[in-house]
Image (cartoon, rainbow, N blue to C red; front, side, top):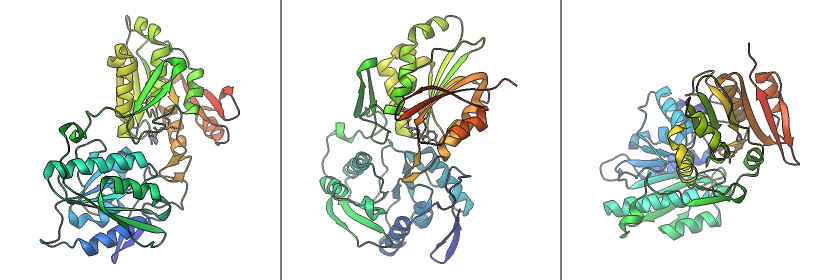
Length: 405
Ligand SMILES: C[S@@+](CC[C@H](N)C(=O)[O-])C[C@H]1O[C@@H](n2cnc3c(N)ncnc32)[C@H](O)[C@@H]1O
């Protein structure tokens, strides 16, 4: 992987996270980062007249924007645990103080410049622009926005989204296949209920699963926020029962998103869980690297199985880094096959490895995947083999048992 980044005459070291990815052609910065850094450095010079009071940087993936604009004392906002780790690590690596990093539902602090790295998710962009509106209104200030992304991300729908929330919207010429969008948010009067852009906000999107009488709500950046994922649904149709154990019983929904797998497990095994709770501990842990996913899953347990909320934990993590080895009895997983815009199997590979490490000997992994994805070798390597529980024209449901040594 190329980790040496030449920026303004300096050589910086920048790593993609999580580390040890196989695809060596991927790097931790792109031309959209460079274009924004160049523009902002030229137009927001570090002097007392022009310098904005704290720049907010939204969605920096691995710290390139934060490092390039470090002179402007940035505060970062991210939904991603992995981005949080990468920004911290890459700043430290380049002898720079790591910035304050806020989660994606946090109220934005006062700032006159907001830099947004564009993603494909228009609803998430709308959420972030509404947060900027709330901040401009709360502090009665005018806020400039500079958004940056590959030209393919600067679509007419993206421009319309900016136009619906901002004034003076324009875009730059393309440079190395990247473009900038400029916009201003004026301090309009917004009612106090609209201003409440924080963690107490209810997840606004809904996916319904009538077969299970489940309604799952989700925040803007959650996978499949307004429809049930068909891979996840396939696992739900073959949901295992509550495992038995002499000690406490621990279940994990790995990469939980809106909580589809974990909430369905709770719903389908509710009676058995309540009975087991009379004599032993049962814990269900929802893990995801997205803050909005964790908050949505928590909301969905409360909404669908409120009696079981006290046995649930919600952990923002990179796979199962924070779980004890050999502690879980059952892991349910519908792994992702991309990171941001890049298609990759490394996260699934890491999930399978962490699942093996986290399961007790004799405990089980249920993993659903698109048929074409090459997970069989990974399952064989970690578990010594697998069983196909079910198959259809799109998905395969794998079952692995951790060997007792
Ligand atoms: C295919 S979705 C599955 C969501 C949900 N379980 C379902 O079945 O609908 C994969 C999930 O993995 C999460 N994810 C991606 N990378 C992760 C990582 N390194 N650690 C934990 N979760 C991750 C994504 O945020 C996403 O919610």
